[in-house]
Length: 238
Image (cartoon, rainbow, N blue to C red; front, side, top):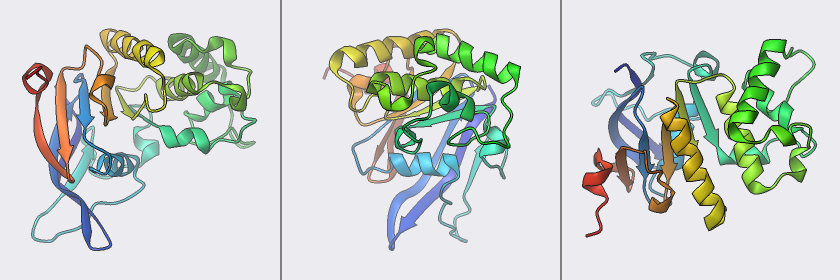
């Protein structure tokens, strides 16, 4: 299978301290992977790297690199049609009066709103509505996001990423703050998406968030990969 994400000897330093240290991993298109680790282990930094918000630490003695679908040089506009990144900090970055439909359509422009110089084509609008139906939020499209529940807002953000029909969906702590019942619904929803052929990488600190269909687990501890393998091998009752 084609590599979707490739990290080789990737490190991130802040104030002289390593946040990530020599991380090497490959996730192929079609794989469903959970990246787990406690808070402070480096998971959020990994998301920032994939979004292009930060750059890896350069070490001339240990060449490193990040490739997304084979591209060494990329930005969010290059990959938005192939990789959807859903980071929960997005929900606080939209204006409260932005409608759910506008949030979903903004994914086509990698923006935080629909501005005057942006044209939402009929094809985009149709894809946005289809993504809303897939996520079960078609009835809140006209509603300002300030009037959405937490679960509805999460679904709208995922629909935003799904509207461009990406090959890979990266979810950063998608169930944080949800109650037990809603978490169960989200796990079932992710299982359905994976059965439909959507490849998901889920980053979480909670083992109970991992859907049944997630086949591979990567554990991060203190900024390094602690172990990487099949779920049934790593997660045992013992």
